[in-house]
Image (tube, rainbow over all chains, first blue to last red; front, side, top):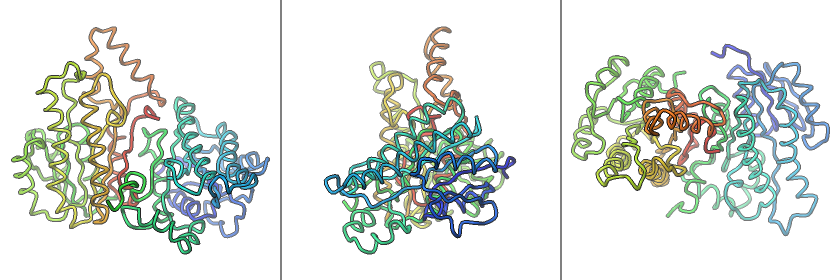
Length: 245
Length: 253
């Protein structure tokens, strides 16, 4: 179906959502450079992989160098992120630096390096934001602030790169079952109440349900969609203050 | 793609530009029945001819309660409903709020708000049977204010909130409600809005001003609205409900 071979960079490729995005893009005929701290088990047809710590100084340069074997980049999916956030008074400098560093600063630095390599016009960027970046939620200050930054980055890039024909959009996942959330889903009853029970559709989302929205945003079907953050959250954000009422 | 293989769909405003485009696309993607609702029956016949045997014509003035009653009686034998697109809408005469007559106001709200409400209320029993989904047609003017299209903007704002409230009310039944929100799409409606600016110079100025607000630097095509609407209606969007998705070339961002 796709006439032209497309190439993508996906960060956090070994995580729940990242793995689903890689699988989906490959199934759609896209060649993927899969980036993560550890890339064991990521190999496969249509997949190049690179083990790198996104927070390291030379990560953007190494990723772009590794992507050269693919040719011009059509798609950048900024998916990598870390959790473990707390309320502000409980967040020491190391925690703030780590969460802002990986979830926001590393995304800015990688995107800056990739922009000149993006097919122009025609390239696209999809950022994985979060519902926590859109509304207040207790106990996750640095994460929420970083993700709000990702949402705003999405709009800034839309304004800056839209005129060049590069589209930037984002998704804001709600409660999704991944290795990052699995433990909390099982051990934190408050999280279960605030997230699962407050999700109107009444189900926990799957990584594949996020990947299909990202695939839409990367496709020509979204050719006139720009600067948007699509909540993939079973209605949590649209209805959160009234769930059950 | 064949995302709607074996499904039944209803499209209101099916004789209009966006409704017609979506109806044709649903048929192309395998829908086994595409029910076309519009008050313009002769135009529906043309759309049905374009679609072929899967099309069913159901004349309906969405704003009229009796007409809706009749239309959904005619629909009833189809049973469960998988996809409902409420594309019927009117921009009215494009008047500012200060210049809007009561009749004009009532007409815009009758079509855009009462029409969407009546359509969905009638469709709910059939949607429930299929755990179906609804895509309403909002507008970027329903998410941000509009100086030149105030009454229209207010009506589309109502559609956005109608969609979110329905999303919450029927999520437990597995019925998804989302809204596609076209911005400046290259349709006769947009041309009319631009041409209502006045003389040639004013028209050119409004055209340039509209374009300048869009980071992508162009107006959208009806097919681009359809692509987004069909994504929302497909299983690809199975974890989305209550979403208003602007298709606006970055205007609102």
